[in-house]
Image (cartoon, rainbow, N blue to C red; front, side, top):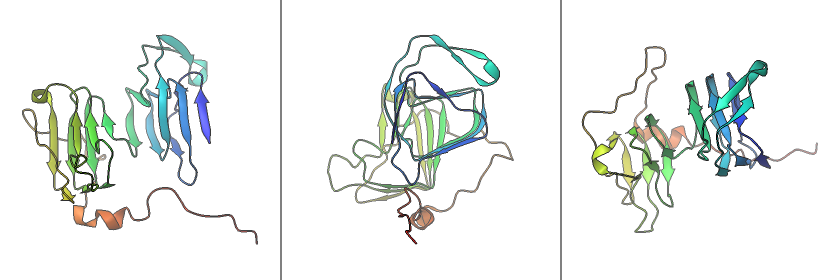
Length: 207
Protein backbone atom coordinates (compact mmCIF):
# COMPACT_ATOMS: atom_id res chain seq x y z
CA UNK A 1 0.00 0.00 0.00
CA UNK A 2 1.38 3.42 -0.99
CA UNK A 3 -0.16 6.66 0.27
CA UNK A 4 0.88 9.76 -1.68
CA UNK A 5 0.12 12.98 0.19
CA UNK A 6 -0.78 16.25 -1.53
CA UNK A 7 -0.32 18.20 1.71
CA UNK A 8 0.93 17.42 5.25
CA UNK A 9 -1.16 14.89 7.15
CA UNK A 10 -2.06 16.16 10.63
CA UNK A 11 -2.12 13.51 13.34
CA UNK A 12 -4.71 14.04 16.08
CA UNK A 13 -4.26 13.38 19.79
CA UNK A 14 -4.75 9.84 21.13
CA UNK A 15 -3.95 8.27 17.76
CA UNK A 16 -2.07 5.06 16.89
CA UNK A 17 -0.84 4.49 13.33
CA UNK A 18 0.37 0.89 13.13
CA UNK A 19 1.69 -0.55 9.89
CA UNK A 20 2.50 -4.03 11.20
CA UNK A 21 1.08 -6.85 9.09
CA UNK A 22 1.15 -4.88 5.82
CA UNK A 23 3.78 -3.03 3.79
CA UNK A 24 2.74 0.65 4.10
CA UNK A 25 4.61 3.43 2.27
CA UNK A 26 3.91 7.14 2.80
CA UNK A 27 5.37 9.71 0.43
CA UNK A 28 4.51 13.09 -1.06
CA UNK A 29 4.28 16.64 0.31
CA UNK A 30 5.02 17.34 3.96
CA UNK A 31 4.35 13.78 5.18
CA UNK A 32 3.26 13.51 8.86
CA UNK A 33 2.75 16.56 11.08
CA UNK A 34 2.32 16.07 14.84
CA UNK A 35 1.15 19.55 15.88
CA UNK A 36 0.30 20.51 19.47
CA UNK A 37 -1.08 17.07 20.32
CA UNK A 38 -0.42 14.34 22.86
CA UNK A 39 -0.43 10.53 23.18
CA UNK A 40 0.66 9.40 19.70
CA UNK A 41 2.07 6.03 18.56
CA UNK A 42 3.57 5.61 15.07
CA UNK A 43 4.94 2.17 14.24
CA UNK A 44 6.03 0.13 11.24
CA UNK A 45 5.59 2.69 8.42
CA UNK A 46 7.99 3.31 5.54
CA UNK A 47 8.05 7.10 5.09
CA UNK A 48 10.29 8.30 2.26
CA UNK A 49 10.78 10.82 -0.57
CA UNK A 50 8.96 13.52 1.38
CA UNK A 51 8.97 16.84 -0.46
CA UNK A 52 9.71 20.22 1.07
CA UNK A 53 6.90 22.77 1.16
CA UNK A 54 6.94 26.59 1.45
CA UNK A 55 4.99 28.30 4.26
CA UNK A 56 1.26 27.62 3.97
CA UNK A 57 -1.91 26.88 5.97
CA UNK A 58 -3.81 23.65 6.60
CA UNK A 59 -7.18 22.84 8.13
CA UNK A 60 -6.84 21.28 11.57
CA UNK A 61 -9.29 19.79 14.09
CA UNK A 62 -12.55 21.69 14.65
CA UNK A 63 -12.07 23.56 11.36
CA UNK A 64 -9.14 25.49 12.84
CA UNK A 65 -6.79 27.02 10.28
CA UNK A 66 -3.17 26.26 11.23
CA UNK A 67 -0.34 28.36 9.78
CA UNK A 68 2.69 26.28 8.85
CA UNK A 69 6.22 27.45 8.36
CA UNK A 70 8.69 25.98 5.90
CA UNK A 71 8.44 22.18 5.73
CA UNK A 72 11.89 20.71 5.09
CA UNK A 73 10.72 17.32 3.88
CA UNK A 74 11.05 15.53 7.22
CA UNK A 75 9.18 12.24 7.46
CA UNK A 76 7.62 13.25 10.79
CA UNK A 77 7.59 16.80 12.10
CA UNK A 78 6.91 17.39 15.82
CA UNK A 79 5.65 20.79 16.97
CA UNK A 80 5.07 21.26 20.73
CA UNK A 81 3.87 17.66 21.03
CA UNK A 82 4.22 15.39 24.05
CA UNK A 83 3.89 11.69 24.88
CA UNK A 84 4.82 10.67 21.33
CA UNK A 85 6.22 7.18 20.60
CA UNK A 86 7.85 6.79 17.17
CA UNK A 87 9.23 3.32 16.50
CA UNK A 88 12.04 2.47 14.06
CA UNK A 89 13.37 6.00 13.49
CA UNK A 90 17.16 6.20 13.15
CA UNK A 91 17.81 9.94 12.68
CA UNK A 92 17.38 12.64 15.32
CA UNK A 93 17.46 16.14 13.88
CA UNK A 94 17.77 18.18 17.07
CA UNK A 95 16.59 18.12 20.67
CA UNK A 96 16.85 15.06 22.90
CA UNK A 97 16.20 11.36 22.28
CA UNK A 98 16.42 8.39 24.63
CA UNK A 99 16.95 5.15 22.65
CA UNK A 100 16.41 2.10 24.85
CA UNK A 101 16.08 -1.71 24.54
CA UNK A 102 16.32 -1.99 20.75
CA UNK A 103 17.86 -4.83 18.74
CA UNK A 104 19.94 -3.67 15.75
CA UNK A 105 21.21 -6.31 13.33
CA UNK A 106 23.16 -4.83 10.45
CA UNK A 107 22.74 -1.30 9.08
CA UNK A 108 23.70 0.25 5.75
CA UNK A 109 24.98 3.64 6.97
CA UNK A 110 24.27 3.99 10.69
CA UNK A 111 21.98 2.75 13.43
CA UNK A 112 21.62 6.05 15.33
CA UNK A 113 22.32 9.42 13.73
CA UNK A 114 21.87 13.16 14.18
CA UNK A 115 21.96 16.16 11.87
CA UNK A 116 21.67 19.30 14.05
CA UNK A 117 23.63 18.57 17.24
CA UNK A 118 21.01 16.62 19.21
CA UNK A 119 21.59 14.95 22.58
CA UNK A 120 21.15 11.18 22.38
CA UNK A 121 21.33 8.62 25.17
CA UNK A 122 21.64 5.05 23.88
CA UNK A 123 20.80 2.73 26.76
CA UNK A 124 20.77 -1.08 26.95
CA UNK A 125 20.55 -1.66 23.19
CA UNK A 126 21.95 -4.73 21.40
CA UNK A 127 24.02 -3.93 18.28
CA UNK A 128 25.15 -6.65 15.84
CA UNK A 129 27.17 -5.20 12.94
CA UNK A 130 27.12 -6.72 9.46
CA UNK A 131 30.17 -8.47 8.04
CA UNK A 132 30.90 -5.41 5.87
CA UNK A 133 34.06 -3.82 7.26
CA UNK A 134 32.77 -0.34 6.41
CA UNK A 135 29.53 -0.66 8.38
CA UNK A 136 30.67 -1.24 11.95
CA UNK A 137 30.10 2.22 13.44
CA UNK A 138 26.73 2.61 15.18
CA UNK A 139 26.52 6.42 15.07
CA UNK A 140 26.55 9.11 12.42
CA UNK A 141 27.01 12.82 13.07
CA UNK A 142 26.72 15.84 10.82
CA UNK A 143 28.58 18.98 11.80
CA UNK A 144 31.24 19.84 14.34
CA UNK A 145 32.14 17.05 16.73
CA UNK A 146 32.50 19.36 19.73
CA UNK A 147 28.79 20.15 19.75
CA UNK A 148 27.64 16.54 20.01
CA UNK A 149 26.28 14.77 23.08
CA UNK A 150 26.04 11.08 22.21
CA UNK A 151 26.17 8.68 25.16
CA UNK A 152 26.19 4.88 25.32
CA UNK A 153 25.04 3.36 28.62
CA UNK A 154 24.94 -0.42 29.09
CA UNK A 155 24.82 -1.23 25.36
CA UNK A 156 26.05 -4.56 23.93
CA UNK A 157 28.21 -4.57 20.76
CA UNK A 158 28.77 -7.69 18.64
CA UNK A 159 30.67 -8.55 15.44
CA UNK A 160 32.86 -5.46 15.68
CA UNK A 161 30.12 -2.90 16.23
CA UNK A 162 31.44 0.34 17.73
CA UNK A 163 30.02 3.53 19.26
CA UNK A 164 32.23 6.61 18.91
CA UNK A 165 31.97 8.42 22.23
CA UNK A 166 32.72 11.90 20.92
CA UNK A 167 30.52 13.85 23.29
CA UNK A 168 29.96 17.37 24.45
CA UNK A 169 30.03 18.70 27.99
CA UNK A 170 27.73 17.18 30.61
CA UNK A 171 25.40 14.23 30.37
CA UNK A 172 22.29 13.43 28.36
CA UNK A 173 19.57 12.86 30.92
CA UNK A 174 15.88 12.16 30.21
CA UNK A 175 13.60 15.00 31.20
CA UNK A 176 11.03 12.56 32.55
CA UNK A 177 8.70 13.27 35.41
CA UNK A 178 7.66 10.49 37.79
CA UNK A 179 4.66 9.46 35.66
CA UNK A 180 6.69 9.29 32.45
CA UNK A 181 9.63 7.32 33.82
CA UNK A 182 9.98 3.68 32.75
CA UNK A 183 12.26 0.78 33.57
CA UNK A 184 14.98 -0.10 31.07
CA UNK A 185 15.85 -3.81 31.10
CA UNK A 186 19.37 -5.19 30.80
CA UNK A 187 20.72 -5.33 27.23
CA UNK A 188 21.21 -9.08 27.58
CA UNK A 189 17.41 -9.50 27.56
CA UNK A 190 16.80 -7.40 24.45
CA UNK A 191 16.89 -10.26 21.90
CA UNK A 192 14.20 -12.13 23.81
CA UNK A 193 12.24 -8.93 24.45
CA UNK A 194 12.10 -8.05 20.74
CA UNK A 195 11.78 -11.58 19.31
CA UNK A 196 8.10 -11.14 18.39
CA UNK A 197 8.35 -7.55 17.13
CA UNK A 198 8.06 -6.37 13.53
CA UNK A 199 5.72 -7.23 10.68
CA UNK A 200 3.18 -9.95 11.47
CA UNK A 201 3.60 -13.01 9.24
CA UNK A 202 0.14 -14.49 8.88
CA UNK A 203 -2.29 -15.70 6.22
CA UNK A 204 -6.07 -15.69 5.95
CA UNK A 205 -7.74 -18.98 6.76
CA UNK A 206 -10.21 -20.29 4.18
CA UNK A 207 -12.09 -22.41 6.70
